[in-house]
Image 1 (cartoon, rainbow, N blue to C red):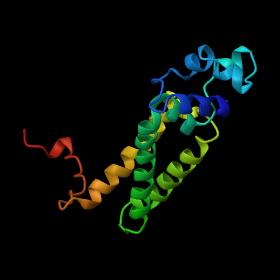
Image 2 (image 1 turned 45 degrees about the horizontal axis):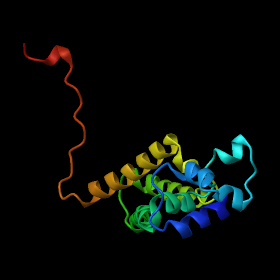
Image 3 (image 1 turned 180 degrees about the vertical axis):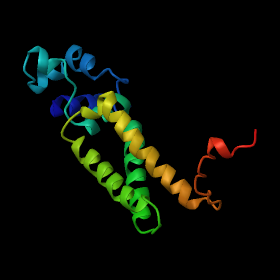
Length: 156
């Protein structure tokens, strides 16, 4: 499948369009020339490397955007490791960094990043990193949550 993706990338450096890999690989003869087995599970699945898949579908510009997102989040988490804070983010940031690192390596072996569940998990991790960073950079510190006023002490 990687050979078919390489051929598509060579012929279409700007990509074939989002979600068009399987169609182009089959109708363009790329899967056949690459020796991909002719059965439903092989010919209906995209290449099992998200980096190749993004490049084949969105071109090198899409790959630069994808890598920029991954590298940006990893570098943000790495810089945040050096900062010390007195809250729970000391425990969250290493876990979020590990999540980003494992996800970026794992997608080079599988195309699971194309499933919406991993998109949600990745977006939650990215949102937590950005939120923690924004809270640490904010000059305003929020007061701790106030205890609710008991009903019997309210003036009424």
